[in-house]
Length: 93
Image (cartoon, rainbow, N blue to C red; front, side, top):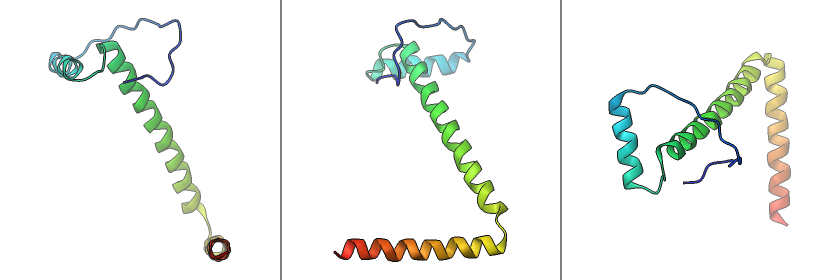
């Protein structure tokens, strides 16, 4: 398991966790190549941050489409048809 970025200097952080969760973390570290608690937690938090960014983008896209008027939605459909037809022509060559 590799972290997304491996800065030369790490910041030590202290956190209080449920003992059952720590047991699960330790078991996972033993059973995999996670390396250490710190590496596993850094990896998991990195994935969580990525997911949060992705969710934010998805929410913004949804908000955009929900904000469209009926006329704008119709125009969007027309552009989608034009793009699909153009792509089809390119793939036929």
